[in-house]
Length: 201
Image 1 (tube, rainbow, N blue to C red):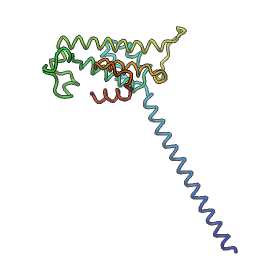
Image 2: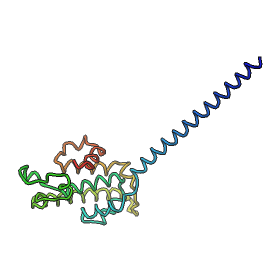
Image 3: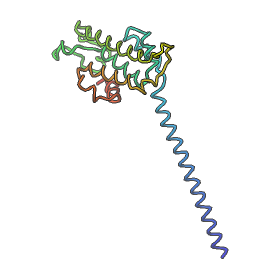
Image 4: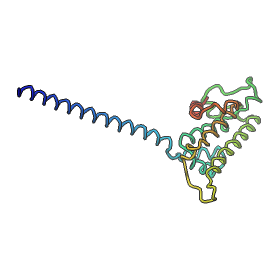
């Protein structure tokens, strides 16, 4: 009778060890998953790099405004805003005026570097100026929305635009206006617009 008892005890020990190993694996896996999710979330809320702020300031021709708005943007919002500025201002072309028969850039590199007569044509220069004004207005709205109602000192709040969605909406609306698709504003989402800007579409 002692043999079955010892065997049962061994089985219990084995089951206990297996259960402990399973729990340990689950805990480690959960910790790793939590770490990845946290890192991903922190990446979105990371401080806007100085290079991005400097480049945005050059496009807006207003470094102070670029610095001010960056304090209220997530890194991904700032990246999308900079990409929008590069494409609308630095590489802006007035296709409506010039038409498709004009000698437009043929490669993505030419477009990215704004090489060609399409960019310096007077119509395109005017279009670029209007785009700059639109982006300046966008940034001013974000900064103004961050001003305390009691007139106190304004504090940096990169997560504020996440909570109220203001920056995302303004970037989406401005993007749609730039491509002449204002009717899409209501259905367009920031993630899709950011992806399109990153892909230079």
